[in-house]
Image (cartoon, rainbow, N blue to C red; front, side, top):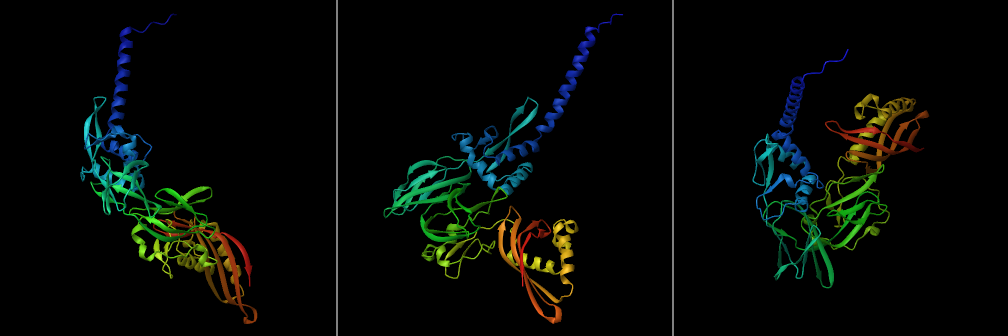
Length: 424
């Protein structure tokens, strides 16, 4: 028997019903997607990505500035380097708080239904000052030409710029010698950026074969002892320095030293010392108290800090306590840690027949192994009384122990590494 055809009116109502459902789903999605706080989250996220195109989000305070990816790149570079500030910006925008630098404005609608928001960004007109005749100014790789002035005051106008992170370089010639002062400058006002050129001598002490970057450009490779000397190097306000190395095939980098030019006094940095003056240089042993300091000879030493790197004294104290009596609270994953299980058995066996057992640990090297991870080489020195009350000293060397700084728990042992040699 032939099927009856559906009435055309039934098809019509079915289509209308599907259309209503689709429009309802679209409206529900759009209301959530274009919700004010969600738009803020997306805009702030892309503010931290220099390769992202954010031109559609930005409304400048001065319409005379060109809005394109190139002019906005410094703003994105700034927030990429300052994640905490980006989070604060998002909070301020959501709470309707602002300081006039970046604000939220409503600018039309999406699909005639959903409110559209953009970021109103203040535009600035700064200038750069230097102290040498015939100085040439370069901003983010673009040559702005010769700086004008007289005596020791020479200026160059930057024109209208968005706020953000700028790489400035002033090139000049002093007594036949070419000098370049580099600076990373965060511009958030109509200020004068001081690029006075001075020179200083300093040494780097960090990881062996590490690469030194100054103002994001490769400057020098450290030697096998993690050392290098920069003699009469041009120092400018805003200089930044960091070290890059690798661990397990992955590039890692130190924290940035941002106070280099202000920390080094040129009057006291004329030493002729270099790395060879120290003979057999000691192995690099982690972060010093200060990233820039003077050694006993008065030379300036730059020791960029590595985030979460274990302190030498702390590592020795934790290890010594556990080689005497293993404590699962000192290990990552606690009682489930393989090194803890092994050490607990080892300690029990080793302590048999030994009286007045004492343990001391000497750290021979600390290297970064990633953010909050430390690779530690060490010696364990046992002293005890054995058979016939004979005094015994035994040294065992370990390589590649791993520490992990864990939030709210401090430095924990992830693994004890490999036992190399034991001797009396």
